[in-house]
Image 1 (tube, rainbow, N blue to C red):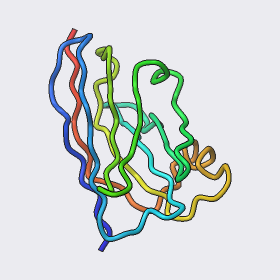
Image 2 (image 1 turned 180 degrees about the vertical axis):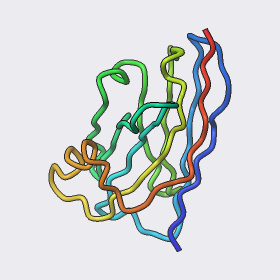
Image 3 (image 1 turned 90 degrees about the vertical axis):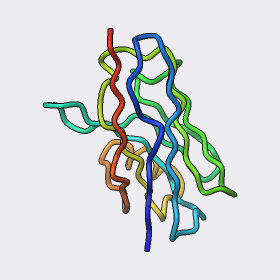
Length: 128
């Protein structure tokens, strides 16, 4: 049974930092691509960052320079380090995985959100 469990969300003041984690189980990472998405109230879900099996990464424009995605294959854990947080970063953050993700598939999945599995989300609230 595949499970993705996020943690690390919380409430912080603008300018602060948070590190999100996503523990994956029931799957082998292999050629999988891993992603962070987010959804704010009243808004559509959007891509935040993605990382391929060879550690190539992709970021949304709003995340560039502030957020860093990384993974630990041995621990089967995905991370998102978020610095210089803004009130507009307030959202539910979800991790997701696309199991078969060859070549530049991760770019497409980042846009289409066509992942195979999703976590339940962790709430990030940034107060100004």
